[in-house]
Length: 571
Image (cartoon, rainbow, N blue to C red; front, side):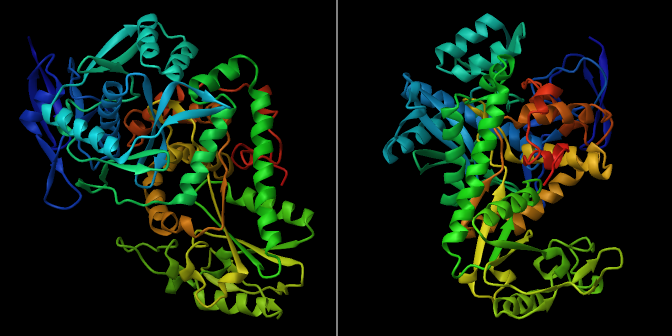
């Protein structure tokens, strides 16, 4: 068989291999390991980017390609590892509890939240959960260790639709069956591990021996599957029992079950059956109720609370949240006044710089904390202050006669990335402050063992809004996203539990809406773009979703949080 040339980006060299050689053999010959972020350490190859498309190492090369091998420190390598680890866990649950099913429900700061549920799972609209004891969780992990030590290969194959549906039905995976049927494809890609079959919407590692680092920790009604840290593949994520965040995610998950939309398959069926407008109305009503609940909490503390801080990660709908919350406060007789925290930046020459020497506008020190604290205390004392404005072009604060004084029924609403960080206002009486954390905490899953990333959901929102309002191309949104995430991990996520209330801005119907707007944007990204790999991954995910029609999108109210991103908002 003739040789073909492979360009390996890892060593910037061409190599010749017989046609049909798989990537695992090529990796062993030219790139058996890849650098780790820790420095000189190396980590094993888990997958590869072939012409900027993610492939498992069993992929056979039949033509000339550009290949980049990736390990755990690459986002796609990390996702490949986690998918594979989920399959091992799935196999153990089937082995130990053949009459039950594993549901990987949503992401937590410490890993993936999982529950063992009865196959006939619903009662009173909620899942029937099997509560595993600590000893049982330890036994599950021990069995996973054995499977990892056995180094069993993951094998990919094609099944006809009916055969795949039969496998999923036998597994008790109703959502996977719903999804397969809703897509109407003739064939389905499945993976097998030691005789058990399942689907994962992306490549897996070559064999279980790659999955040496993980842990299981009891959490709420189930347990948390912990995987390695980013930058340290030999150590699992630190345990963070963030109960407020977990409760918000659990609440949304239960609500999806009550609406009988537990996965993308059920959602697709609702769209096809013409029931999506009912879901839009129910989801919007749920949001309205949550805004009212938070306003009631603020009103109940009206004798002390005079400041409401709102924080959350990018594209969580913080602006809409502040406006909708202000309306609910007005209904109760309060008079909200808005101050933008961005007006309290220090002048440009005092802005701190990051490790690359660039201005770090997200650092806490980029704000004039002393001046902010002074003005807030004066307002709380009943004094009149002149609120500053910030000229971002000139990098200077200025005043233009905007005076403010807080009367008895007035409350301040302020939105900013540091609003949950107590270090922002150390000299202000905490009893006067009410903190709201807003984020799109979707608990909707693709199916039983493939959850949807809340980060992906927010990135789609941002891509659509930035392209519409600022002319930013989708490629730039994707390439900037990791930097955005690093800022969130540093400035927002550590302080989530400081909130007095959490507002979940996710809508059960929003992915079919976002697909309508995002898919054409993503398809513009060229194969040679550094954003192509991520665009392809998102497009594959969106391919499992049935989009809404323009007429159905028109049913979304003009006050909806989604209108902040897709246009048409009247707030």
